[in-house]
Length: 397
Image 1 (cartoon, one colour):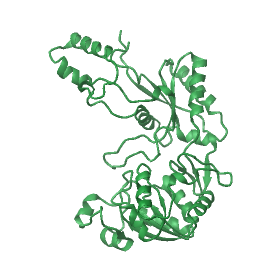
Image 2 (tube, helix red, strand yellow):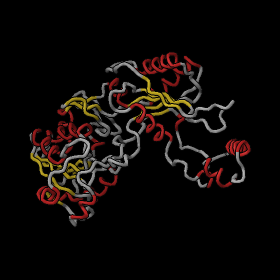
Image 3 (cartoon, rainbow, N blue to C red):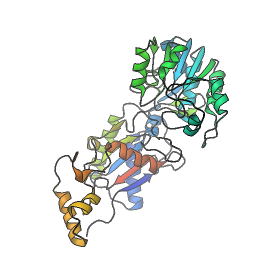
Image 4 (cartoon, one colour):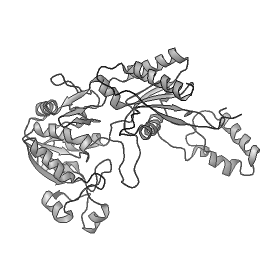
C-alpha cells in the first residue's frame, strides 16, 4: 500500500545549551531519544536541523558593548559616524547600536521610510502619499518627520523606534541626529564615515557610498570579524545575525559550522546505518502578509548544511499534469499516469511547463523556513527539528 503521509516536521526538545556543550553528541542523542519515545524510524534522507542560536551558544560566540565600541572606534575613528538603514528591532539591533554609539562622539542615524529593509514600518505608505512626500527623493529632518507624521508606535511592539534609538545613542554617551532618507548617499551631507547596517542590500549600499565620496565605510558585516579583547566574532558576517543576550551583550551568528553538520551526519550513520542530511538554520525567508514583515533578518537562512541539501526542488506540478496532459483521465487511470510521468522525469525541469509554479527557491531556504515555523522563537523548547519525507513524491511507497 502506498504511504499516506508526506512531509512531517517534528520539533525535538533539548536541554538548555551552554557554552562548551558537545553539540554533535547532544543533537544525535536528542533525535534518537525522540525516535524511541514517539515511535518513528530514522530513514535515509531524513533531515536533522538545529537553530543557529544553540550552535552559537555552544561556541560561546558572544561580544559585549565595549567590544563593539572598541572595534568601531578603531575602524571609523571615533568622531561623527553615519549609521545607515538599521532594521527596527530591539532584539536585533539595539545592543549593537549601543556599542556603535559608545565608540563615537556623534551618530547621524539615517532611517529608511516608510519601512526598514525587512518590513518593519515607521509609518504607513498611504500616509506618506497623503502628505505629498516622495520617499525616493525627499530627505526629512527629525523636525520635519514629527511635523508630518507625529509620534508613531510599531503596531506589534508598541515602540516608537525613532525615540527609542535616539535614547539608546544618547544613553551610550554620544550626540544624536536623525534623518529619514532612502538614498544612502544622503548621509554624506553630514559625515564621510559611515556604517551601512542593511543586510541583503549591503553590497549596493557600500558601492553607492564609496562612489559618492565616502571616506570610511565599514558595514555591519565588517565589524567584529576578528576577536576584540577575546570576544566572539564572525569572519564572514561580523555583527550581522546578532541577537540580544543581555542589555550589554550580543550573541553573534555562529561560525565554522560545517564540521558540526558533517559530524552529526557521520554520527547518525554510525548509530543508525542511515544517511541523513543536516543543516543549521536561522530566520526563515517568508513574509507576514498582515504585519508586512519579511522574516529574514539573518544574513543567510543556513550558514552550513550537508551536500545533499544543495540545489533547488526539481518537481512536476501535479495540477498542471491533471489539467493539461491528462485532462481526459480520472480515478486510478489518472493516478497511474501521473505516477508514470514522475518516474520518467530526467534532468532539470527549469523552463518546462510541467514544472511551472513550483517554488523557485533553494532547498536550504525552503527547509529553513519550515524549521523556523516549527521551532518558533519563544518557549517551545524545540531548537532541533527533524524532518521526514521532504524528498518523497507521489510515487513513494
